[in-house]
Figure: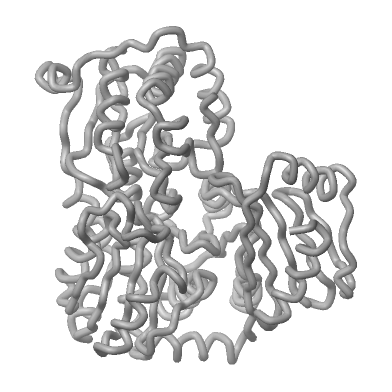
Length: 469
């Protein structure tokens, strides 16, 4: 069975990520497009650096082409936000990215995009699963023959994507600051686009971990304090103003300040929202998922804006941004977007704005964060991930979501929500705790935000004991 989660279809290579399954998926999409009468609209397809991503992109293209659906095949390894930009720019009804984003190296997957270059909604992926389940024998043609016939066209939209980001940056401000940046693509696909943008702005840019390594150097291609340790040390030792890490498909970022300190993704959202509102004067509220810092709520309230909470999954953020015309939307895993760009996460665009912020304000990241915390206070986010067996998952589901039992946290409870997992919000602004199953990996995740990380870990300990984790 091909099932879509919050980040698309993801599976272990040679287990469920197989040629047969990808051909079924592509045929299901072709059947859906046929039923909708949009087979004249091209499908934009791109891929990242994961094992077999390039070949898998061709497998999908061959099926679509065999069904008479034109394909715009993006040349070379591409960031996911570039693929989404291309779907939007070409007016495609659908697009595909072959990637498993930040998952471990043994995974690969497919993200589906819809008109406007946005993540497919649950309704779309549910319908697609239905079409896939009814596929008999997929139609397949030869990739090179389809290119020769013109049904598959190989395109290179990188310049248009790069120019779209440069068009909104204060290039002169960056040029006059001589900022020194160290980039860690984490063996992924951000280097070409992000380095080109920063060099165009006359930044001094050095790069580490940019070779093609499908094992991602033996680490998870997800920017965190642990995985960016090498970046942190080099930034501090060699006098860089900023370290930037991007995940495997470049839709998420991690930051290292000039002292080598890891900046939590929550603080990245806070920094950019604060900068865009206070310094650039852009108007609008903010959208966050339920696992992202409530410090955004405080800032929005002070500025006369609204902070909207949505379930995990960037499609929910994009939808709420459209509905409310919010300025920025993002999540605590380092993914965000800004109004007027694509309707999905873009680590490259976010990184460029962070560099502009440094140059405009003229303070280190740590000083800008101090400025924010002095005004609005400070929260600490504690996190815990745990893999589980099928039996343990059933046990947790029964406890939390059927019987709806809670441990004694020793705090007054203001609100309990089951919109996405379990979220308990404590009275008197004492923080919150969330417990949910990952939509991309067999993990249970617990997040807790309080005024200190230590207090957060205490409550996570209470929840772990209660659930037997």
